[in-house]
Each structure stands twice: as C-alpha cells, then as structure tokens.
Length: 134
Image (cartoon, rainbow, N blue to C red):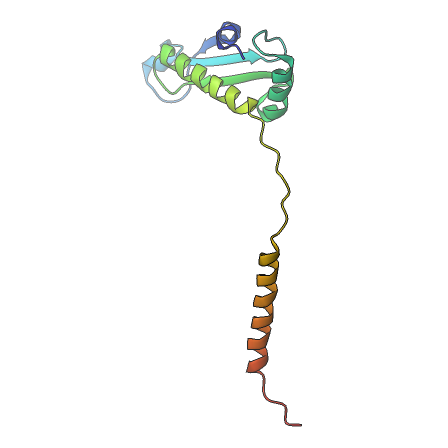
C-alpha cells in the first residue's frame, strides 16, 4: 500500500452541510465527500484490492467505490483532514487478514474433572432422596 499514491487518487468534493447552523450553513460548503475507486487504484496491489473488496463489501457501492462523508467541523479543511484520516484507518482495518484458528483438543484432565463433578453432583442428589424401605 503506497500512501502517497493513494492520496493522489482520492477525489474530494465540497458540499453544503445539512442541519442547524444559521446563515453559515446556507453560504459555505463545509461538508467534504471523499470517493475512492478501488479497482482503478494504482497504489494497491491486486491482492490488496481483492482483500479490500471482500472485507469492505458492505461499505462499497456497486462499482466498488468507497464513499466517506464528514461534516463534523465548520471548516472545510478540517473536515478534509478528518475524512482522510478516517479513510486510511478504514483501509488499514480492511487489509487486516485474521489469523486462522487452530483446532485444539480438550485436555484429558478437564474431561476427567467434568465427569468427576457430574458423578459428585449425582451422589449429592441421590442422598436427598427418601430412603427405600424394602
């Protein structure tokens, strides 16, 4: 993953932010929309692209583009920094490959202890019964 190459491939778009904010909201385009096209990226290898598409499948559009929005701040520049940071965090998490789980045996001591505890509980319940008067 080449961060500098990826940064040049990001497309930013400034949009008017929604919600409350008075006159500033009506005049200033402070919301930033980041789009990144994974298949067309030159900064990612083919394996990384496949991994990202499978891991981030729920976040991608039908053309396998990642779209992120940020309107947390009144400053367009700060929103751009926030959304860029968030993009690289998502990319980092999307490229993580989880370790394969190794199947392990249950220790024999644990099996013996479980059976011993079951027998002990059975004896306790047996001792609570009414005695047989045969």
